[in-house]
Structures are given as C-alpha cells and as structure tokens.
Length: 160
Image (cartoon, rainbow, N blue to C red; front, side):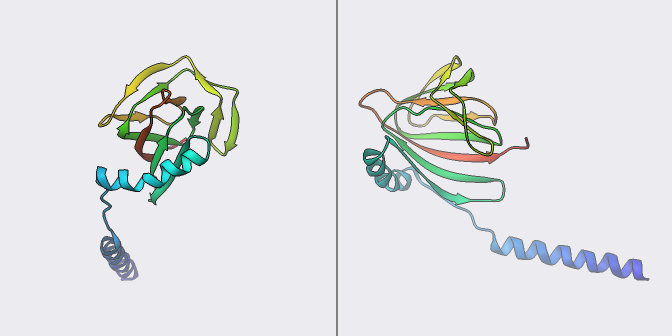
C-alpha cells in the first residue's frame, strides 16, 4: 500500500510541476528591425571603445542570446563550453574558423582569447547568413576598413 501511495504522490508532484513550468513558459520574438534599432546604442558604445560592443538579451537554462556590433576586427576566440550561432543582420565581415588562436590567454573559465586565428577557413558574411561555430573551434571576426557588422548570437552550452 505504501508503494502505491508513493507512486501516486510522485505522479501528482510530477504533473503539478509540469503544469507550473508550462504556465511560466514564454516565447521571445526578435524581429530584424527591432534588433537593428536596439543595436543603435551598441554602435555608439563601439565608437567610444575598441570598435566592438555587445549585450546579452536573455538567459535560458542552457543557452543565452546576444546582440553584437563591430566596426573593427576582433581577436581570436575559443569557447570550450559554448557553441556560437550567428545570424548576420546588417553589414559585412569575414569569419575565420578553425586553425589555432595565436598568443593564447585564458580570460575566464573555458574562455580563450588571443591576437588572431592562424590558419583556418575564411567565409564572407552578409545579411541573412547564419553560421554555427562548435564549442572548441577557434574563430575570429574580421571587419574590413570602413565597414560594420551587426549580428544576433545564440550561445549554446555544450557538454565538455
């Protein structure tokens, strides 16, 4: 009898937690126009700083979203625990993937930075392009002189 009661109680707790989670679930919608309007302040921050600015839009259990703007090239990066998914909203850039990060520095747990990426493949990025960069893959965003790039990023946590 106790075993049956325990199973029923477990089932009730499971069902009630599913109901609570489904009631608190919301979806997020970002139109291209809304993101570009929001990126205007990132342009201003980039102009005052090192040519790059980004902001986290929202965080979820195993991923988060960002908006990024560049008017200058970035250095090499490698995220050991996060894959990157880029959607190019505006502008033009060249993405180098693969190869190796030069002048390696660990800036945070699982986050590697460097002066550049040596070797690797080059890809032209234009509005509408989408790119997936697996966790552990070196990458670098190059922005040609006089150009800019605005992009939406989904950072997806991967098992190490």
